[in-house]
Amino acid sequence: MVHEPLPYNDYGVAMRRRFAGRVQKLLIDAALSCPNRDGRVARGGCTFCLNEAFSPAYCRESRSIAEQIDRGVAFHAARGRMADSYIAYFQAGTNTNAEIDVLERLYLEALYHPKVSGIIIGTRPDCISSEILDLLSDLAICHYVAVEYGIESTSDVTLAHVNRGHNFDDARRAVQLTRERGIDVGAHFILGLPGESREMLLEQMAAINALGLSSIKFHQLQIYRSTPMAAEWAEQPQKFLLNSYSAEDYVSLIVDLVRRLSPNVAIERFASQAPHNMLLCSPLGGVSLDRLKMMIIEVMRRGGYVQGDMLLGV
Ligand code: SF4
Image 1 (cartoon, rainbow, N blue to C red):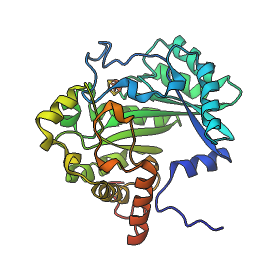
Image 2: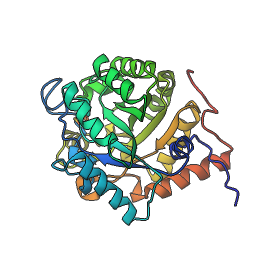
Image 3: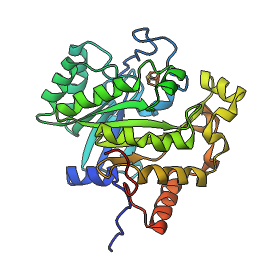
């Protein structure tokens, strides 16, 4: 059966090509704190953050890295997701926020696991140093190593408003320094942060393209219960773009963003889904992530659109 090519650069396809087979990420919680909570940058954290939302049950922080990997492999196998290669994805918290010898021990524990082919390190753009990049470069000689930065927005006004504790220049610098070491760089962006309009989101694609990312994740803003953002949402819902969005509106936004994104950037996510009981509300009409992806593909194919056909700023 001949499959019609996807109208965008799909991260899963790119990883299958790189690893010559099916690749499965295993989420790791290394129990590292966040500098935006522990006082190194600020206290209180980002106004949208609920850290528990990031980790599935198989990686409770009290378990060793090796145990989390074993449980992760079993978790996916039980759901029929067998893989040829596994990547340990240090996701929860800020995974460069420790002394260098601690980081080296954690990363090596993952890389020494016989099933693991590489690591992805999730962190903040203001929590990277030449010492850490030296370590990652050394590890990358024999393993796949990538860094994933939470950038969230290109607007310094928005970043300050949500108490990120860094600005977009920090992100530019971190991405550039990491790329200079030949390490793949991914980034997250949140769509619908307070005060950001559809036009702003489209305009920021020029700055995103200029970063030279390997991969990108788009997340719709999810409002977690008991966060400062939940209170802001309750008081001023009109500041939140997605407040009035249907799934179709979100699909239309994503299609317009993808058309403005460099085709060199592999897209890993169009949206995410936290457990419903953690969320104050669930915009996008409760449409599943798979359905949302199919809707995006359908709209792009129907319109004859492909990633980057309205490219800005490369
Ligand atoms: S989103 Fe990331 S940087 Fe912000 S408080 Fe949560 S863990 Fe820290």
